[in-house]
Length: 151
Figure 1: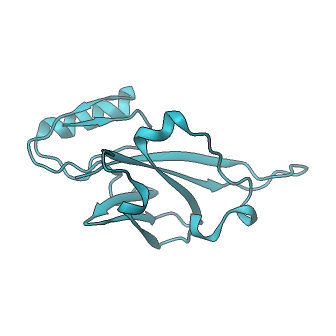
Figure 2: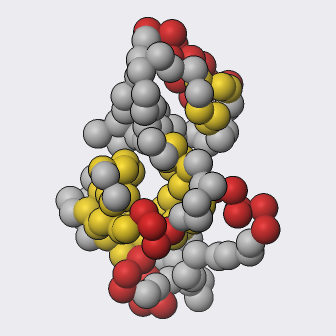
Figure 3: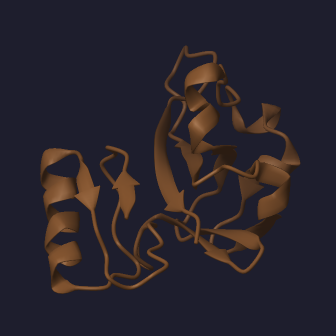
C-alpha cells in the first residue's frame, strides 16, 4: 500500500490494477487519496511525458528533465519534511551546480545518500525560472514536487 501526498502533478508509472489507475485520476482531480496496488512495488512518479520524472532503479534515484529549460531540484526523505526548513535558490546563477538538470537530461543520485533505514518515500522538489520582469531583482519561479515511493 502506498500513500499519495497531495500535489497537482502526480501520476502513476506502474500499477497493479485498473482500480489504481482510476484512483490516480481521482488524485489529480481532488488532490489526494490512498492508492492500493496488487503488484509490488508500486512506484509513484510522473509519467514519461511529464515535465520532470523521478523513479528508483535499484539503488539510484533517477530524475529526468523533460522541459526545454533547465530545472533545479532538491531531494529529501518525505518523513523529515515537517522538521526541516528549506528554500529554493533565488536565481539560476545562485543555484549549486548539483541542483541543476539541463533540458533533455537526467541525473542519478544514490538512494542511500538520501534516505534513512525507515524511509518509505522520497520527495523531489523541482522548479524552473520564468522570465525576469522589468525592475524585479530576481526572476519568478514555478515550484512543484514529486513523491517517489520506495520499493
